Image (cartoon, rainbow, N blue to C red; front, side):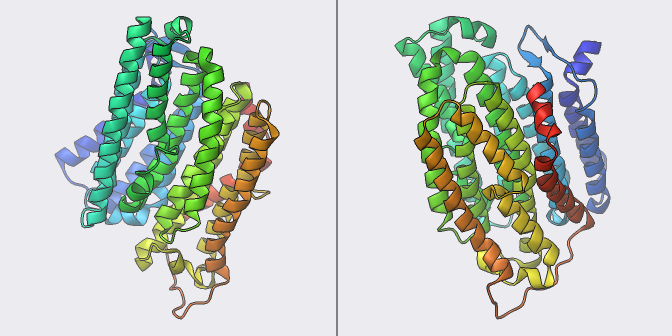
Length: 464
Protein backbone atom coordinates (compact mmCIF):
# COMPACT_ATOMS: atom_id res chain seq x y z
CA UNK A 1 0.00 0.00 0.00
CA UNK A 2 2.86 2.39 0.80
CA UNK A 3 4.38 1.74 -2.64
CA UNK A 4 1.00 2.29 -4.28
CA UNK A 5 0.48 5.64 -2.52
CA UNK A 6 4.03 6.78 -3.25
CA UNK A 7 4.25 5.83 -6.91
CA UNK A 8 0.76 7.08 -7.80
CA UNK A 9 0.75 10.19 -5.62
CA UNK A 10 0.30 12.58 -8.55
CA UNK A 11 -2.65 10.65 -9.97
CA UNK A 12 -4.26 10.24 -6.55
CA UNK A 13 -4.01 13.94 -5.70
CA UNK A 14 -5.55 14.97 -9.03
CA UNK A 15 -8.33 12.41 -8.57
CA UNK A 16 -9.02 13.75 -5.08
CA UNK A 17 -9.32 17.31 -6.41
CA UNK A 18 -11.74 16.13 -9.12
CA UNK A 19 -13.94 14.46 -6.49
CA UNK A 20 -13.85 17.57 -4.30
CA UNK A 21 -15.10 19.67 -7.22
CA UNK A 22 -17.79 17.10 -8.01
CA UNK A 23 -19.04 17.15 -4.41
CA UNK A 24 -19.01 20.95 -4.38
CA UNK A 25 -21.04 21.05 -7.59
CA UNK A 26 -23.52 18.36 -6.59
CA UNK A 27 -24.02 19.26 -2.95
CA UNK A 28 -24.32 23.01 -3.17
CA UNK A 29 -23.18 25.67 -5.56
CA UNK A 30 -20.37 27.94 -4.37
CA UNK A 31 -19.83 31.47 -5.60
CA UNK A 32 -16.97 31.71 -8.09
CA UNK A 33 -15.29 34.42 -6.02
CA UNK A 34 -14.80 31.79 -3.30
CA UNK A 35 -14.44 28.69 -5.46
CA UNK A 36 -11.65 29.97 -7.73
CA UNK A 37 -9.18 30.76 -4.89
CA UNK A 38 -9.92 27.35 -3.38
CA UNK A 39 -9.16 25.68 -6.72
CA UNK A 40 -5.94 27.67 -7.04
CA UNK A 41 -4.81 26.52 -3.57
CA UNK A 42 -5.66 22.89 -4.39
CA UNK A 43 -3.66 23.10 -7.63
CA UNK A 44 -0.72 24.62 -5.75
CA UNK A 45 -0.86 21.72 -3.29
CA UNK A 46 -0.86 19.38 -6.29
CA UNK A 47 2.38 20.97 -7.52
CA UNK A 48 3.97 20.69 -4.08
CA UNK A 49 2.85 17.07 -3.66
CA UNK A 50 4.62 16.17 -6.89
CA UNK A 51 8.00 16.87 -5.27
CA UNK A 52 7.33 14.66 -2.24
CA UNK A 53 8.43 11.04 -1.92
CA UNK A 54 10.23 10.63 -5.26
CA UNK A 55 10.85 7.07 -6.29
CA UNK A 56 10.94 4.46 -9.02
CA UNK A 57 8.84 1.37 -9.52
CA UNK A 58 6.01 -0.27 -11.39
CA UNK A 59 2.46 -1.39 -10.59
CA UNK A 60 -0.28 -3.54 -12.13
CA UNK A 61 2.03 -5.97 -13.85
CA UNK A 62 4.29 -3.25 -15.27
CA UNK A 63 1.34 -1.48 -16.91
CA UNK A 64 2.13 1.59 -14.79
CA UNK A 65 5.66 2.70 -14.00
CA UNK A 66 7.37 5.80 -12.73
CA UNK A 67 10.89 7.19 -12.38
CA UNK A 68 12.28 10.48 -11.05
CA UNK A 69 12.31 11.79 -14.65
CA UNK A 70 8.64 10.86 -15.15
CA UNK A 71 7.82 12.53 -11.81
CA UNK A 72 9.59 15.69 -13.00
CA UNK A 73 7.59 15.63 -16.24
CA UNK A 74 4.34 15.38 -14.29
CA UNK A 75 5.41 18.26 -12.05
CA UNK A 76 5.96 20.45 -15.11
CA UNK A 77 2.44 19.68 -16.36
CA UNK A 78 0.95 20.34 -12.90
CA UNK A 79 2.77 23.67 -12.80
CA UNK A 80 1.27 24.55 -16.17
CA UNK A 81 -2.27 23.85 -14.95
CA UNK A 82 -1.69 25.91 -11.80
CA UNK A 83 -0.43 28.86 -13.85
CA UNK A 84 -3.46 28.62 -16.16
CA UNK A 85 -5.72 28.89 -13.10
CA UNK A 86 -3.87 32.06 -12.06
CA UNK A 87 -3.39 33.77 -15.41
CA UNK A 88 -6.97 33.42 -16.64
CA UNK A 89 -8.69 34.30 -13.36
CA UNK A 90 -10.75 37.10 -14.94
CA UNK A 91 -12.31 34.80 -17.52
CA UNK A 92 -12.70 31.88 -15.13
CA UNK A 93 -14.41 33.90 -12.41
CA UNK A 94 -16.94 35.25 -14.90
CA UNK A 95 -17.92 31.81 -16.24
CA UNK A 96 -20.94 30.14 -14.68
CA UNK A 97 -19.51 26.65 -15.17
CA UNK A 98 -16.19 27.16 -13.37
CA UNK A 99 -16.23 23.83 -11.51
CA UNK A 100 -17.07 21.86 -14.63
CA UNK A 101 -14.24 23.52 -16.55
CA UNK A 102 -11.65 22.44 -13.99
CA UNK A 103 -13.16 18.96 -13.72
CA UNK A 104 -12.58 18.58 -17.45
CA UNK A 105 -9.09 20.08 -17.29
CA UNK A 106 -8.01 17.89 -14.39
CA UNK A 107 -9.51 14.81 -16.04
CA UNK A 108 -7.36 15.53 -19.10
CA UNK A 109 -4.34 16.08 -16.84
CA UNK A 110 -5.02 12.74 -15.13
CA UNK A 111 -5.08 11.05 -18.52
CA UNK A 112 -1.75 12.66 -19.38
CA UNK A 113 -0.24 11.41 -16.13
CA UNK A 114 -1.29 7.84 -16.90
CA UNK A 115 -0.11 8.31 -20.48
CA UNK A 116 3.39 9.29 -19.39
CA UNK A 117 3.55 6.38 -16.93
CA UNK A 118 2.05 3.78 -19.26
CA UNK A 119 4.03 0.61 -19.83
CA UNK A 120 1.46 -1.13 -21.99
CA UNK A 121 -0.25 -0.14 -25.24
CA UNK A 122 -3.69 -0.83 -23.73
CA UNK A 123 -3.37 1.67 -20.88
CA UNK A 124 -1.54 3.91 -23.35
CA UNK A 125 -4.62 4.09 -25.57
CA UNK A 126 -7.12 4.47 -22.72
CA UNK A 127 -5.01 7.24 -21.19
CA UNK A 128 -4.75 9.00 -24.52
CA UNK A 129 -8.54 9.05 -24.87
CA UNK A 130 -8.92 10.36 -21.32
CA UNK A 131 -6.39 13.08 -22.12
CA UNK A 132 -8.18 14.10 -25.34
CA UNK A 133 -11.96 13.97 -24.94
CA UNK A 134 -12.21 16.46 -22.02
CA UNK A 135 -10.14 18.97 -23.98
CA UNK A 136 -12.64 18.84 -26.85
CA UNK A 137 -15.37 19.79 -24.37
CA UNK A 138 -13.16 22.57 -22.98
CA UNK A 139 -12.74 23.97 -26.48
CA UNK A 140 -16.51 24.49 -26.63
CA UNK A 141 -16.72 26.42 -23.36
CA UNK A 142 -17.30 29.82 -24.95
CA UNK A 143 -20.96 28.88 -24.99
CA UNK A 144 -22.22 31.96 -26.79
CA UNK A 145 -19.80 31.77 -29.72
CA UNK A 146 -20.45 29.70 -32.83
CA UNK A 147 -16.74 29.61 -33.65
CA UNK A 148 -16.13 27.79 -30.34
CA UNK A 149 -18.50 24.97 -31.32
CA UNK A 150 -16.89 24.78 -34.75
CA UNK A 151 -13.43 24.48 -33.21
CA UNK A 152 -14.60 21.75 -30.83
CA UNK A 153 -16.18 19.81 -33.70
CA UNK A 154 -12.96 19.97 -35.72
CA UNK A 155 -11.00 18.73 -32.75
CA UNK A 156 -13.40 15.84 -32.14
CA UNK A 157 -13.21 14.78 -35.79
CA UNK A 158 -9.41 15.01 -35.93
CA UNK A 159 -9.17 13.13 -32.61
CA UNK A 160 -11.48 10.42 -33.95
CA UNK A 161 -9.31 9.97 -37.05
CA UNK A 162 -6.09 9.90 -35.03
CA UNK A 163 -7.58 7.41 -32.55
CA UNK A 164 -8.65 5.12 -35.40
CA UNK A 165 -5.16 5.30 -36.90
CA UNK A 166 -3.61 4.60 -33.50
CA UNK A 167 -5.87 1.60 -32.85
CA UNK A 168 -5.07 0.17 -36.26
CA UNK A 169 -1.36 0.58 -35.53
CA UNK A 170 -1.73 -1.09 -32.13
CA UNK A 171 -3.60 -4.02 -33.72
CA UNK A 172 -0.77 -4.45 -36.22
CA UNK A 173 1.81 -4.33 -33.43
CA UNK A 174 -0.05 -6.98 -31.46
CA UNK A 175 -0.56 -9.13 -34.52
CA UNK A 176 3.14 -8.98 -35.40
CA UNK A 177 4.59 -9.41 -31.90
CA UNK A 178 1.87 -11.03 -29.77
CA UNK A 179 2.35 -8.58 -26.90
CA UNK A 180 1.30 -5.09 -25.82
CA UNK A 181 3.92 -4.62 -23.10
CA UNK A 182 6.51 -1.93 -23.77
CA UNK A 183 9.31 -3.98 -22.19
CA UNK A 184 8.51 -7.04 -24.30
CA UNK A 185 7.85 -5.05 -27.47
CA UNK A 186 11.39 -3.66 -27.42
CA UNK A 187 12.66 -7.26 -27.63
CA UNK A 188 10.12 -8.48 -30.19
CA UNK A 189 10.31 -5.55 -32.62
CA UNK A 190 12.05 -6.35 -35.89
CA UNK A 191 12.28 -4.39 -39.10
CA UNK A 192 9.63 -6.36 -40.93
CA UNK A 193 7.15 -4.71 -43.32
CA UNK A 194 4.17 -5.25 -41.01
CA UNK A 195 5.96 -3.76 -38.01
CA UNK A 196 7.19 -0.81 -40.04
CA UNK A 197 3.61 -0.15 -41.16
CA UNK A 198 2.46 -0.36 -37.52
CA UNK A 199 5.12 2.16 -36.50
CA UNK A 200 4.06 4.57 -39.25
CA UNK A 201 0.45 4.45 -38.06
CA UNK A 202 1.46 5.02 -34.44
CA UNK A 203 3.72 7.89 -35.40
CA UNK A 204 0.92 9.46 -37.47
CA UNK A 205 -1.29 9.46 -34.37
CA UNK A 206 1.44 11.35 -32.52
CA UNK A 207 1.57 13.72 -35.47
CA UNK A 208 -2.07 14.71 -34.90
CA UNK A 209 -1.62 15.19 -31.16
CA UNK A 210 1.57 17.26 -31.49
CA UNK A 211 0.37 19.24 -34.54
CA UNK A 212 3.25 18.11 -36.72
CA UNK A 213 3.01 19.09 -40.36
CA UNK A 214 1.07 17.78 -42.30
CA UNK A 215 -1.19 16.74 -39.39
CA UNK A 216 -1.59 20.31 -38.12
CA UNK A 217 -4.61 21.55 -40.07
CA UNK A 218 -6.99 21.48 -37.08
CA UNK A 219 -4.75 23.48 -34.75
CA UNK A 220 -5.34 27.13 -35.65
CA UNK A 221 -9.13 26.77 -35.97
CA UNK A 222 -9.41 25.01 -32.61
CA UNK A 223 -7.21 27.58 -30.86
CA UNK A 224 -9.21 30.44 -32.34
CA UNK A 225 -12.54 28.98 -31.25
CA UNK A 226 -11.47 27.77 -27.82
CA UNK A 227 -11.47 30.08 -24.78
CA UNK A 228 -8.01 31.29 -23.79
CA UNK A 229 -7.54 28.85 -20.87
CA UNK A 230 -8.42 25.88 -23.08
CA UNK A 231 -6.15 27.10 -25.89
CA UNK A 232 -3.31 27.62 -23.40
CA UNK A 233 -3.83 24.09 -22.04
CA UNK A 234 -3.77 22.65 -25.56
CA UNK A 235 -0.71 24.64 -26.54
CA UNK A 236 1.43 23.93 -23.49
CA UNK A 237 0.27 21.10 -21.24
CA UNK A 238 -1.05 18.83 -23.99
CA UNK A 239 1.96 19.39 -26.25
CA UNK A 240 4.36 18.75 -23.38
CA UNK A 241 2.66 15.50 -22.37
CA UNK A 242 2.70 14.07 -25.90
CA UNK A 243 6.32 15.13 -26.38
CA UNK A 244 7.25 13.23 -23.22
CA UNK A 245 5.47 10.02 -24.23
CA UNK A 246 6.90 10.26 -27.76
CA UNK A 247 10.38 10.13 -26.24
CA UNK A 248 9.47 7.00 -24.27
CA UNK A 249 7.88 5.33 -27.29
CA UNK A 250 10.79 5.98 -29.64
CA UNK A 251 13.65 5.46 -27.22
CA UNK A 252 12.34 2.35 -25.46
CA UNK A 253 9.83 0.57 -27.70
CA UNK A 254 10.95 1.39 -31.24
CA UNK A 255 14.70 1.65 -30.68
CA UNK A 256 15.31 -1.03 -33.38
CA UNK A 257 13.73 1.41 -35.88
CA UNK A 258 16.12 4.21 -34.92
CA UNK A 259 17.46 4.73 -38.44
CA UNK A 260 13.92 4.99 -39.76
CA UNK A 261 12.49 7.32 -37.15
CA UNK A 262 15.57 9.52 -37.13
CA UNK A 263 15.17 10.41 -40.81
CA UNK A 264 11.42 10.77 -40.31
CA UNK A 265 11.84 13.11 -37.31
CA UNK A 266 14.37 15.34 -39.02
CA UNK A 267 12.31 15.66 -42.19
CA UNK A 268 9.06 16.41 -40.36
CA UNK A 269 10.85 18.75 -37.92
CA UNK A 270 12.14 20.91 -40.77
CA UNK A 271 8.77 20.87 -42.52
CA UNK A 272 6.98 21.75 -39.27
CA UNK A 273 9.30 24.67 -38.50
CA UNK A 274 9.06 26.11 -41.99
CA UNK A 275 5.27 25.81 -42.35
CA UNK A 276 4.62 27.05 -38.79
CA UNK A 277 6.80 30.11 -39.27
CA UNK A 278 5.51 31.00 -42.73
CA UNK A 279 1.88 30.82 -41.67
CA UNK A 280 2.57 32.75 -38.47
CA UNK A 281 3.82 35.65 -40.61
CA UNK A 282 0.32 36.11 -42.06
CA UNK A 283 -1.79 35.95 -38.91
CA UNK A 284 -3.70 38.87 -37.40
CA UNK A 285 -5.65 36.98 -34.73
CA UNK A 286 -3.46 36.49 -31.65
CA UNK A 287 -4.74 32.95 -31.01
CA UNK A 288 -3.99 31.81 -34.54
CA UNK A 289 -0.64 33.60 -34.28
CA UNK A 290 0.26 31.64 -31.13
CA UNK A 291 -1.12 28.45 -32.70
CA UNK A 292 1.30 28.56 -35.63
CA UNK A 293 4.03 29.68 -33.24
CA UNK A 294 3.44 26.51 -31.21
CA UNK A 295 3.61 24.43 -34.39
CA UNK A 296 7.02 25.92 -35.16
CA UNK A 297 8.16 25.17 -31.59
CA UNK A 298 7.17 21.53 -32.08
CA UNK A 299 9.65 21.39 -34.95
CA UNK A 300 12.49 22.28 -32.57
CA UNK A 301 11.25 19.69 -30.05
CA UNK A 302 11.37 17.02 -32.75
CA UNK A 303 14.96 17.97 -33.57
CA UNK A 304 15.91 17.49 -29.93
CA UNK A 305 14.18 14.11 -29.80
CA UNK A 306 16.01 13.02 -32.96
CA UNK A 307 19.32 12.82 -31.09
CA UNK A 308 18.14 9.50 -29.63
CA UNK A 309 20.16 9.80 -26.42
CA UNK A 310 19.87 11.13 -22.87
CA UNK A 311 20.97 14.63 -23.87
CA UNK A 312 18.01 14.85 -26.25
CA UNK A 313 15.43 13.81 -23.65
CA UNK A 314 16.94 16.21 -21.09
CA UNK A 315 16.89 19.07 -23.59
CA UNK A 316 13.23 18.38 -24.46
CA UNK A 317 12.12 18.26 -20.80
CA UNK A 318 14.02 21.47 -20.08
CA UNK A 319 12.57 23.16 -23.16
CA UNK A 320 9.02 22.17 -22.19
CA UNK A 321 9.60 23.73 -18.75
CA UNK A 322 10.76 26.96 -20.39
CA UNK A 323 7.89 26.74 -22.87
CA UNK A 324 5.41 26.53 -19.98
CA UNK A 325 6.61 29.89 -18.63
CA UNK A 326 6.97 31.60 -22.03
CA UNK A 327 3.83 30.50 -23.85
CA UNK A 328 1.56 30.73 -20.81
CA UNK A 329 2.79 34.28 -20.19
CA UNK A 330 1.89 35.19 -23.79
CA UNK A 331 -1.52 33.53 -23.53
CA UNK A 332 -2.06 35.18 -20.14
CA UNK A 333 -1.48 38.70 -21.45
CA UNK A 334 -3.59 37.96 -24.54
CA UNK A 335 -6.42 36.69 -22.33
CA UNK A 336 -6.32 39.77 -20.11
CA UNK A 337 -6.32 42.14 -23.09
CA UNK A 338 -9.19 40.26 -24.75
CA UNK A 339 -11.22 40.18 -21.53
CA UNK A 340 -10.99 43.93 -20.96
CA UNK A 341 -10.98 45.22 -24.55
CA UNK A 342 -12.81 42.49 -26.46
CA UNK A 343 -10.07 42.43 -29.10
CA UNK A 344 -8.06 39.40 -30.20
CA UNK A 345 -6.29 40.96 -33.20
CA UNK A 346 -2.67 42.10 -33.12
CA UNK A 347 -3.71 45.67 -34.01
CA UNK A 348 -5.50 45.74 -30.66
CA UNK A 349 -2.07 45.80 -28.97
CA UNK A 350 -1.10 49.14 -30.47
CA UNK A 351 0.00 51.52 -27.74
CA UNK A 352 -0.46 48.89 -25.02
CA UNK A 353 2.75 49.91 -23.26
CA UNK A 354 1.58 53.49 -22.66
CA UNK A 355 -1.16 52.78 -20.15
CA UNK A 356 -0.27 49.16 -19.38
CA UNK A 357 3.53 48.92 -19.23
CA UNK A 358 3.51 45.75 -17.12
CA UNK A 359 1.46 43.81 -19.69
CA UNK A 360 3.54 45.24 -22.54
CA UNK A 361 6.87 44.27 -21.05
CA UNK A 362 5.76 40.80 -19.95
CA UNK A 363 4.36 40.08 -23.42
CA UNK A 364 7.65 41.25 -24.94
CA UNK A 365 9.65 39.09 -22.55
CA UNK A 366 7.51 36.06 -23.40
CA UNK A 367 7.82 36.60 -27.16
CA UNK A 368 11.59 37.09 -26.92
CA UNK A 369 11.83 33.81 -25.00
CA UNK A 370 9.74 32.03 -27.64
CA UNK A 371 12.03 33.49 -30.30
CA UNK A 372 15.14 32.33 -28.44
CA UNK A 373 16.63 35.76 -27.74
CA UNK A 374 19.30 35.84 -24.98
CA UNK A 375 19.39 36.14 -22.02
CA UNK A 376 15.89 34.64 -21.73
CA UNK A 377 15.48 30.95 -20.88
CA UNK A 378 14.09 30.35 -24.37
CA UNK A 379 17.58 31.00 -25.78
CA UNK A 380 19.09 28.26 -23.62
CA UNK A 381 16.18 25.92 -24.41
CA UNK A 382 16.73 26.28 -28.16
CA UNK A 383 20.51 26.04 -27.68
CA UNK A 384 20.26 22.73 -25.83
CA UNK A 385 17.83 21.33 -28.41
CA UNK A 386 20.08 22.27 -31.32
CA UNK A 387 23.17 21.01 -29.48
CA UNK A 388 21.50 17.64 -28.90
CA UNK A 389 20.36 17.50 -32.53
CA UNK A 390 23.82 18.52 -33.74
CA UNK A 391 25.36 15.39 -32.23
CA UNK A 392 23.85 13.43 -35.13
CA UNK A 393 22.45 15.89 -37.66
CA UNK A 394 24.43 17.34 -40.52
CA UNK A 395 25.28 21.03 -40.65
CA UNK A 396 22.55 21.84 -43.14
CA UNK A 397 19.87 20.76 -40.65
CA UNK A 398 21.25 23.14 -38.02
CA UNK A 399 21.50 25.90 -40.64
CA UNK A 400 17.84 25.45 -41.59
CA UNK A 401 16.86 25.59 -37.91
CA UNK A 402 18.91 28.76 -37.42
CA UNK A 403 17.25 30.41 -40.42
CA UNK A 404 13.87 29.55 -38.96
CA UNK A 405 14.91 31.26 -35.75
CA UNK A 406 15.53 34.44 -37.74
CA UNK A 407 12.11 34.19 -39.40
CA UNK A 408 10.39 33.63 -36.06
CA UNK A 409 12.10 36.69 -34.59
CA UNK A 410 10.56 38.80 -37.35
CA UNK A 411 6.95 37.86 -36.65
CA UNK A 412 7.39 38.01 -32.88
CA UNK A 413 8.74 41.54 -33.32
CA UNK A 414 5.52 42.45 -35.16
CA UNK A 415 3.67 42.22 -31.87
CA UNK A 416 6.43 44.02 -29.97
CA UNK A 417 6.33 46.83 -32.53
CA UNK A 418 2.57 47.13 -32.08
CA UNK A 419 2.98 47.35 -28.32
CA UNK A 420 5.73 49.97 -28.20
CA UNK A 421 5.98 51.78 -31.55
CA UNK A 422 2.79 51.72 -33.62
CA UNK A 423 0.52 54.72 -33.14
CA UNK A 424 -3.19 54.40 -32.55
CA UNK A 425 -6.10 56.78 -32.81
CA UNK A 426 -7.67 55.44 -29.61
CA UNK A 427 -5.13 55.08 -26.78
CA UNK A 428 -5.19 51.76 -24.96
CA UNK A 429 -7.37 51.83 -21.89
CA UNK A 430 -5.99 51.22 -18.42
CA UNK A 431 -6.35 47.53 -17.63
CA UNK A 432 -6.55 46.31 -14.05
CA UNK A 433 -6.16 42.52 -14.10
CA UNK A 434 -7.01 40.25 -11.21
CA UNK A 435 -4.36 39.87 -8.52
CA UNK A 436 -4.11 36.18 -9.29
CA UNK A 437 -3.35 36.99 -12.93
CA UNK A 438 -0.65 39.45 -11.87
CA UNK A 439 0.88 36.77 -9.62
CA UNK A 440 0.84 34.31 -12.52
CA UNK A 441 2.53 36.82 -14.81
CA UNK A 442 5.21 37.48 -12.21
CA UNK A 443 5.87 33.74 -11.78
CA UNK A 444 6.13 33.29 -15.55
CA UNK A 445 8.46 36.27 -15.92
CA UNK A 446 10.68 35.00 -13.12
CA UNK A 447 10.76 31.59 -14.76
CA UNK A 448 11.72 33.07 -18.13
CA UNK A 449 14.59 35.02 -16.59
CA UNK A 450 15.82 32.53 -13.99
CA UNK A 451 15.38 29.14 -15.66
CA UNK A 452 18.23 29.98 -18.03
CA UNK A 453 20.50 31.71 -15.53
CA UNK A 454 20.17 29.02 -12.84
CA UNK A 455 22.18 26.24 -14.46
CA UNK A 456 21.34 23.75 -11.70
CA UNK A 457 17.86 23.29 -13.21
CA UNK A 458 19.28 21.76 -16.38
CA UNK A 459 21.94 19.90 -14.40
CA UNK A 460 19.26 18.41 -12.16
CA UNK A 461 17.21 17.22 -15.13
CA UNK A 462 20.34 15.70 -16.62
CA UNK A 463 20.88 13.56 -13.54
CA UNK A 464 17.39 12.00 -13.72
